[in-house]
Image (cartoon, rainbow, N blue to C red; front, side, top):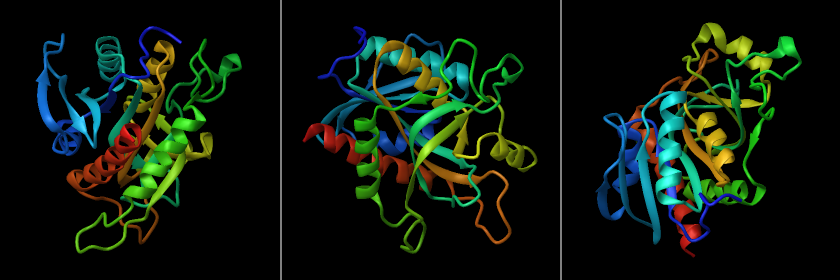
Length: 251
């Protein structure tokens, strides 16, 4: 364990976009903006979430942005655990919009060193998958279960949560590339542009990591599937689960 991890430290919440982080910061008691070392694109707020001291960082979009902001968040605040929040694209054919994805394993969607004997998504020198510790993944899944409730207008019950593999890469997963990606990663539930980078950074710095991101759109939906929900709706789905996760830390 490195000095970056403090078992009494705050919860560090990461979200790529301001709309995603706002759903969490709106739940904070005593929110106060924090100064960051970044010229632009990164903001941070500290407060109390469900009784747990929490730092919410808006990282910006993409692998490099997530890596930089996560590194600063960890070194500056020594969190007990890091959680990725916000939205993602649904990749598994049976995932529906609104589904809360509990990430417990992570890899890069477009990394390809298979010519040298590496697994799809594996970067040379790194593991095939970055894995959440079982206890933290279970706590995140419990939080997702407690947070289950209406996720679409009119009070209709949302499609719940799924736990498993999340992919990340600096390419938006369009319908044209969704099916080949499913073939390469048959267990993958979702795709985004930040989570694996944050998982890799937390692993390097010895801090536990999980993800609670909700599906806003489908990567190549099947006929008859609803394929999009507004960002503010899925951000609230994610934020409810993050709040329940924070509550479990404060208990």
